[in-house]
Image 1 (tube, rainbow, N blue to C red):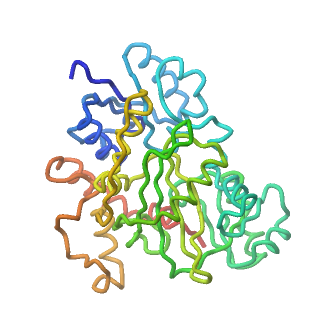
Image 2: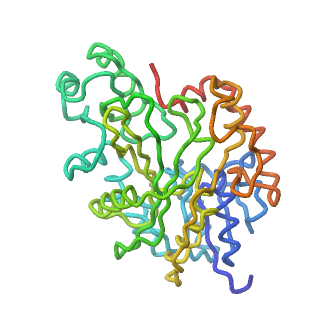
Length: 389
């Protein structure tokens, strides 16, 4: 371990920290976690060498904390694990780059991907498939209604977990709902509502500064909780070169570097897979890619530190379950006995669990109980549903 290079994970309280820590340790890195609470998945993993409780990334105190930490410790590289820490690194890139290394787009290009409205503008300009969208900061509500039609969604330009997304069915509905969304969540856009019935996918990519694709995977999201637009609780990796190629084109147009996680939804009216958003960091379900042979953790770390990168060998067909959410899905779904794969298929050589496993039980136990209790909170479920009425 004396020769191991040290990687700092920001927002290490997240569930993705479990897998990222494990794979970085496999690649002989020393892993340091920043967590804003002990009561979290990441803080319980046994694969981190150090864990530090920090202010929340969004707080002014965090900047001071990180500066002092970097001054006192030899941190060779940083990887962000949620949107807030990815945005933080982009905004403070010039200053922090003098103290350590990390791969993140410059803020101009970062927001072209992270800001959902800017991303839709890029898709419209270059004719990438996407839902009809109108910028509510630039267009009148009447013009936006005419352009997009109804039903549609008011979507804050920068939000996570579906917060603030509101379904509207008419111009009158839009006029009534928009002021509160603007006040609470900031600038927003109106987007065509894609009806239920289409498949949903994630495309995960890593592009280096020379626009080379160093790794990719595609994930089919099978089950969600809540069922209407919630978070994935069962998914499987698949092969889809067309989706990968599309998303690579988007990243190149916005001059993106580093990791990106796309959400795409199939529109059942025309069968076209449409780009919905880009998450600028590894998602909760990153373990799907890792167990399928695409070690994004090591790819990111090695590229950050200018180390050699081996070409991944992608083996799709691996299932990942988020047991806490999947349990909630089972309790509430009318399709509990009709789903494929069966909910009761709990073990198998191609089945893994997002919250950890037998080699790292504390996150699984702690996180499953905590997540289950959190999901019982009606306000939390409402925010995670991705759709308010």
